[in-house]
Image 1 (cartoon, rainbow, N blue to C red):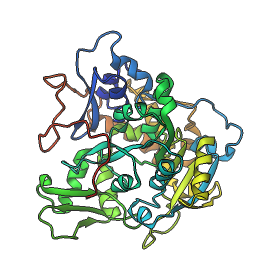
Image 2 (cartoon, helix red, strand yellow):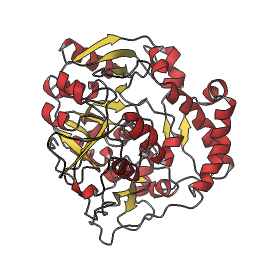
Image 3 (tube, rainbow, N blue to C red):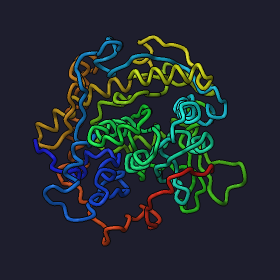
Amino acid sequence: MPRPRSVHDVAAHRLCTGCGVCAYLAPQDVGMVDVLDEGRRPIPLRPVGPGAGAGAALDCCPGAGLAHDRARPAPGEIGELHAAWGPVRALWEGYAADPQIRYAGSSGGVATALAAFCLEREEMAGTLHIGPRADVPYLNEPRFSRSRDELLAAAGSRYAPASPCERLDLIESEPRPSVFIGKPCDVAAVRMARRVRPELDRRVGLTIAVFCAGTPSTAGTLEMLRRMGVTDPQRLESVHYRGQGWPGDARARTREDRAGWHRRLSYEQSWGEVLQRHRQWRCHLCADHTGEFADVAVGDPWYRPTGDDPGRSLVLARTERGVRLVQAAIAAGYLVLEPAAPAVLPASQPNLLRARGAVWGRIGTLRLAGLMAPRLRRMPMAAIWWRRLSVREKARSTVGTLRRVRQRGLRRPLELTAPHHPRQRAADPLTGGQQRRPDPVGGRED
């Protein structure tokens, strides 16, 4: 099986998650661009040679591999969950006490409320997270929010490519610790980067991961917008993927739409019929959908029926720091949470458990086919494949992988070239406008 020599090899073989940690670690060598049918990808800003930053950044690349520090549960962790769900010290279910945050969130608004608590009561400097670009709202950009209102302006899931780790420099440069919110792969990248950047390690006050079933490409968002009747995305004012109830509708507004009105698709229509079909290839090889490397992870309690419920979140504290801050946020009145039994986690996310097992079959098939695959260590998958997957699901994870190799052209490396000038940002996939580094503070509410 071939091994990557740099993050550009990872991207060329379609194993990139798009997190952007390589652009943070080697900003002179690596830039991030949006590839319409793939996602956010690194490109070389100058020739790649021995000792270049793109090679060194490989050690922190979650696309290349993930590994837990230990195979067995540590003292204080819930043993029955460890093998399939990673380290878990405590579980709760509940929601943000602030009804505005709860309503805006994709489920219960817990990630936003916990970040607000850290800013207001723990005196953390800010929160690095993702929000819509003000000039191109169907694209994402990193934001560094310093207040509740700035957090609220970007609340809710963004089912589109995002590179929050690209701006870890914003955390590193602050005088006080900050919060990081991202997908599981983003948080895993932060954890690895902290090991090589001591100053970053000192400045990360809390990491929050949001459960993830995969990142759709920008092409997925554009197809979703076409389903909504948006014929010219350049006329968009706002795009929301969930929220305003659980699970909430996907919503979009153009400049021509009347005040207060949104084009809508249900969650089943937007995610179930459109977006999930555009997930990047690396997401089909992901064993961590629930933020196993985070201090706190939040997700949907899908064992509950959906409908008019304003939203609830399943909350996992994975570290002692996570337990302490969640408990403090409950005591301070920011979160309304009740302890949950360990069995609630697999009941809430049965699809993610089966997906973890299928990954074992997919990675094994890729290796037998002589293709590059991520290295996942101390993340048990084989037992789930054997015990949890049906014969049909096992066949899909192996024979189906070979079919995808042919259909997606995975034997042909993806060609990603640098812009003509080292400081030039790659063009937006639709508008042709230049991508930019965002204003590090705030955002605006659509």
